[in-house]
Image (tube, rainbow over all chains, first blue to last red; front, side, top):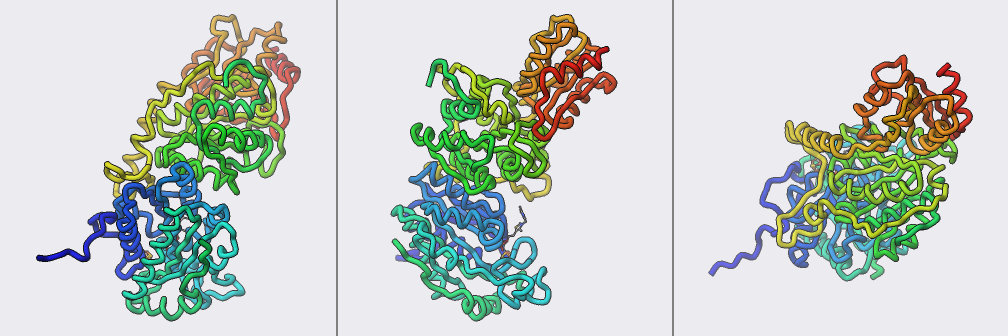
Length: 246
Length: 350
Ligand SMILES: Cc1ncc(C[n+]2csc(CCOP(=O)(O)OP(=O)(O)O)c2C)c(N)n1
Ligand code: SF4
């Protein structure tokens, strides 16, 4: 007798995505879908898709999803959760969305301790608009708007969102993960699952930062891009649990 | 609530919303509308709804967006500078076809301006945001209408799944009058949110709410569809006050909101002038044809506003005879008095 031990999650539609080869968005989409299946909450999940490369997430996930204006995901998510406290609400955002234009929404949603889950894909640039510098770009990183590499004097320093949010009382759980190999993918899934479980248990605000790769704009092969995450990004952005105050 | 009550304009807006079933309110402090968030912070939880003090007007409008996605009747209120911050969110609501009520208690501008009453956001209300969209705009002119129009705005927003604006000013917001509440009136709920809101895909296909349409021709088609809806609104929801149709007038005064009140005083006082008032109540849709008809009998059409001439552009489009149209307005919080308007009228009629 054959037994299926690995298949397509029900929370994912059987369609091809719009992501570039090697892009972390597709991996994380699948992890979220698996977690939602495992927690059996697909029928009460409401996702909020960002303006960014993941804007079409509503075409890939098999549950209710809304769009939000660039940077405003967490305001939209918080209101949905306040209106429908028994539903599972999560915000999916890139670093331009969450750490730049939506910084005020991020800080205040976190500080209000909204009982939502935030999945934050930090790929150190504005993927969708062609790889411009983001607040998260590393020092020395060449982007289309930092052609000589980001230098602190002209562009300021890269921002560590989790460390910024950690002191806020309303914030309950913060973990930074990556998805560059099988072991780290398994770890990332665990963290994402915890962030959803927290919401279901009414723990409060949880956010998972995924160090993501953007091979297309980094102009690197997928494997090389993953190495850059492992070596350069993870060096500056420490992996692991940043806060666990449940 | 029901029965007669002495009430401030801003509170009447809050009560109209609660009675219409508004169960989500978000707002950020700005004068002259602070009574609304203050009152809502107490009243909304009593009514079983959600009150949120937003940390900016950007957050206000996007909270309203989210509450609407979840199917709640929702509202935000602000004044002029805050309304500028909301324009992107209003456009998203129109694009996503989400209902919601937005109140602008106008103050003087541009910039930080002042906190005196003004009508300088007429353009922004009738030509809002980015993209090709329209927003039903109701302009109350007394406290009863502050209550009634807010109440009705929720049904309009639901019926057309479109944002609706109450455009008023600091004078009406701060003024008190006796009004009649509720009278057992029930909101009509013309289009239940259960048909389209995101509540979790239990027993149905997943839903998506979006305004991004990248396939060739898709956005063009979406705009045509929106336009069909706007045409329907123009046909069905046009409102204006013109009680003196039968009167023997040769001057027609066109004014909205609080200036329409002053204009009634002008007509009562200026017995030597044969004047009638035409008051647009919906600023969008604007009653072009009705005003054109009313203007035929008049030698002169006077437009009075608390700005340097905004609605007058629509009046000119309606009248189609610029030589007939006279404008008097005061910007920056200047309140045109009855005497001032009457002497302008007399000077021009001579
Ligand atoms: C108000 C506004 N400003 C700018 C844009 C253009 N824009 C679209 S996506 C994007 C950047 C997205 O970058 P990020 O959030 O890092 O996500 P990624 O594409 O890298 O996943 C920008 C700036 C917009 N849509 N709206
Ligand atoms: S541009 Fe970058 S973030 Fe966007 S899909 Fe391609 S690899 Fe992913």
